[in-house]
Length: 520
Image 1 (cartoon, rainbow, N blue to C red):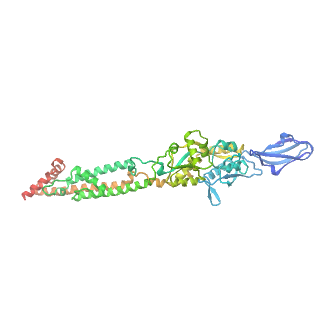
Image 2 (cartoon, rainbow, N blue to C red):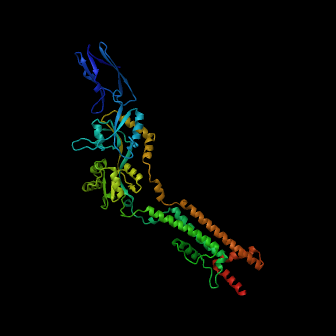
């Protein structure tokens, strides 16, 4: 209950058109005007701040003018006349995008969450000049900042960078997202050629597995050549030519898809050879396919890892968004590297008019786009041939803009902090920055050992089958020899194994065969 001392027979009423008039600082004011009576209202009572109030009733007693007001603690705006907030934004993926007649995106979801917490309605409108906000020489602002300054919008929600100049013109909330300045490049000009890049198609574990498979196959061929009687059925002048060195050479020859003779004659040796050939064919196919997919045409081998590398070269052009806070950062910087970058961009006029143009020129090659790291991360997620440099400078935040001095700024900041603490901002970030290149990245990455486990299994089965056939061949030969010599099969088999597995006596089985032929 608010009592205003008023002389008798004086009548005051509220102007409807000024009931919730917005002042320069976005304050809501209640104005009283005397329409009859002789005395004026005291100066202190001529204007009353109308924040979180709603006019209920006016009555006129004999000596006091009684004005009843009801406070609404959960409202940060005047609900008497203005029932919804006017929000200005700009179309930019993924902050605000068209979906039919509506808008969707990160900022739209953020606005909805804030509106739920503060309990206000809103109406979103696109900025007329499609600009964020830049101050001209006369001190006037354009874009979303200009609309808020002129009172054409209550709030501006977009990726608005929090800067000192904007803070002087409008009120800015706590940042809802942190960002910085980085470089967007095409992959083939962002990275140099490594000395061991030819090993990149396979992971280290895969290379170790291939080496073990190679040595195991060579050893298995050597053992099978010793065990199988067919490999000893040579002319009198020849010995068993499958020595350990020849087995290693024969196995390595399969990588050339030609092989190195002599080839195994026994079925057991041929089974092992076929398994190894199949393994090498699939292995080479995987190697060359991943090698070609991981390498793009090498138009240039310039390594750009940061801004100093960019400033010290003249091979590729670079630029940023015209009139952006990124340009202002380089313009106002005292760092000599950043000053050189700014002077180069001013001299060559290599600015772009939009984010899409910068991404397009970066995709075409021979151009490095300098921009907000958050926006560049989105471009990398959408365009798999692009990559962002690791260096990020000039860390700052994105904020919501309101009229200077508006009491709603504090409420908005509190709501943003609450959403951040609840993990809602991180969820929205992951929702709208989801990469479409994750599948391609997995395909082009180094092949792990489990990716070829099927071929390792086939090779293992082939080696096992070949060894089993060699043992069966030797057992059959031992049974025949035992029957002829009238000895036990185990005794003959033991003798054969002892003779065949000793490399110093590698020619003894052949000599025994020759002696048998002479006796015959």
